[in-house]
Image (cartoon, rainbow, N blue to C red; front, side):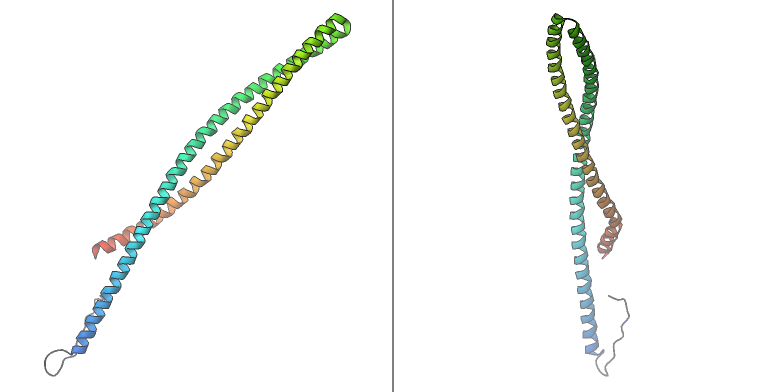
Length: 188
């Protein structure tokens, strides 16, 4: 409906020219059908955008939940790594102390045969402790590597959240256009 004013040709007898009236009515019906089709297409697009928005929102919530879980795991891993680091420092200090004791035992063994036997026994004990400390140190290293892995997973989750936030921003930019389309269709 273009809003144009249409004048019909008059017939000599009996009113307006029938062809002009029929053409005008056909034109109005065609415009009405085109308008209805455009409205239906716009409504379908609005429904599709609403569905896509809901899907993005759900993905965002999942990613946010995953990020929270990863943050908790990261904090736990960092705490464990800190405790293990402190334990490693303590073990290194103890190992240095044990090495000093071993050196003293070896010197004493040179002076006295009996002291040497005792020193050898102490030495064996210290080597056992060193092996135990090495195992504990290896376990601490493995725990630290696991902490690094948790951190990498947390960073990957963060990048997903950033992508979802970008999608949310895009939707927010499209939302005024959707609302204006809705307003247009509600007024018809």
